[in-house]
Image (cartoon, rainbow, N blue to C red; front, side, top):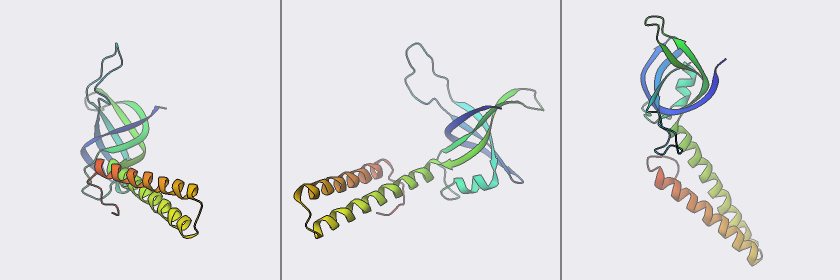
Length: 160
């Protein structure tokens, strides 16, 4: 059995054969600054296989060109034609970075709506000042969180 790995990277050379989708995923380096005394590897290419269903569900839309996030098992394999070793990943989970960001925005918007509702409800029932201030602070914090996320991800289409 191979080691479990989570990869994020750019997809190349997608090939569909029956119910299996194969592609190369180019990752790294993960950071620009290596720990003292260590050198960073350059970009690494993995050969990934997933099912057609995983592939179809992974993308935000058919034109989604964002990086993919893959959870799977790494196995060293040998190319039958050349005899060279390569890194293969059998995907257990596949999703695009865009889809993850859209989900996160949806969660933030839901939290904002809940904070807004709680503040309005407390205001309508004339809650004590301390409770109103607490609800207002939670509402403002949720609103700022949505704004910061939208600034970093202007391409997202979630609700305004």
